[in-house]
Image (cartoon, rainbow, N blue to C red; front, side):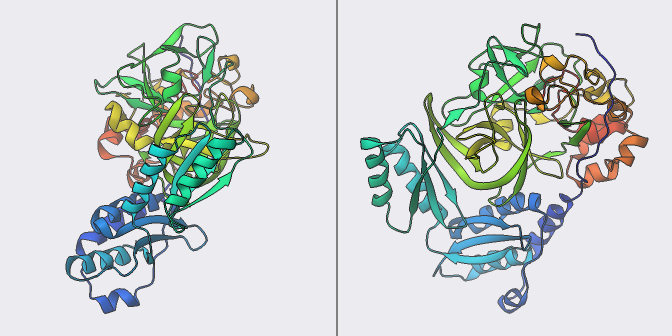
Length: 480
């Protein structure tokens, strides 16, 4: 594969919100204030992307008292649910105090997280009807069940009766106008045979070699993927870890060329990129952005966790539910926050970007753990021409028909899909990473504050901010 220098103007959103989670983590072990003090403390404001990580920490601390969490974007506060009437004393009392001291508002609810999970398990056992999905919504403290337009007659009766059997306060059901499907399509972006998907995030595999994540239903559909339709393969699926259907929808694609430089960015089109600095946890209410090869950039909120979707191909569990739109060809594309946290990989859903609908995502954190990969640049050296892989990115407007390499502003319909390779001045900055990277607000200090990780930042050399991540396959033209 030829390597071209391309640079990009990093202009999407300023990094920095992730730093707050570090402060919260420091507060937790020492927050042994009195009950009186905790009652007087007002909830603290938190950046949206910090909420998921803090919620995970508090879930572990609260144990059986935990009943879910969500983010109130209006108040910029994390709401933690605890069981109504729970005997709060001793260590439990201290944990509640810690939650409040860390900045969360504590709310009493009826259904525990365990009870909600058990209800979801009953739905899976008794009502796994194609065209249905359910997720836990901490805002309502209920399971939200959705049935698409194909669910009628006996199937609808099955869903309805199962929901009722859970009890009036446990679950609700609604109809969706669309149909649940995976977003795989023949076309352009990353290509495998007659299929088209989108690349998600660049990673370093367990052997320390460059790779990228995409949807599992893409990985099981085709073994090799290229950056152009009919082009030479650039990556091969790790068949041993590709998952779909089942406990997730993810696949690891190893780059065939071990010297591939994999940039830690998502192309947004029009020469704009966002640096990916860490993997984050989803929280209901979190504002998220999705990039895909068909519809480009879209945004919305997380609306449910631990979602189960009954696709025609089979049932998938452990997903994130959102109201972000997506369409065929967007499968595998990246879901991320404004400050550069990798959240998910596009799985499927109903509707489109005209009428809207529900869309589901594979959590990045569980995908990384399952395949043994980490976010990173596979050791790209600082100052190298291709540092971060940006130097490999197809130049603006070049190989736009290669899908992921679609240059900024070109083939927007095929890949606003992470116009990898759009724009030229900053991919050099992605490698040299000095003046322009600093000007773009992605200096070394912010990369560290954003949780990019000290080891990855060091491995990335001067251009840490771009090399910490996983995404772009900028150089490869594989679009996110």
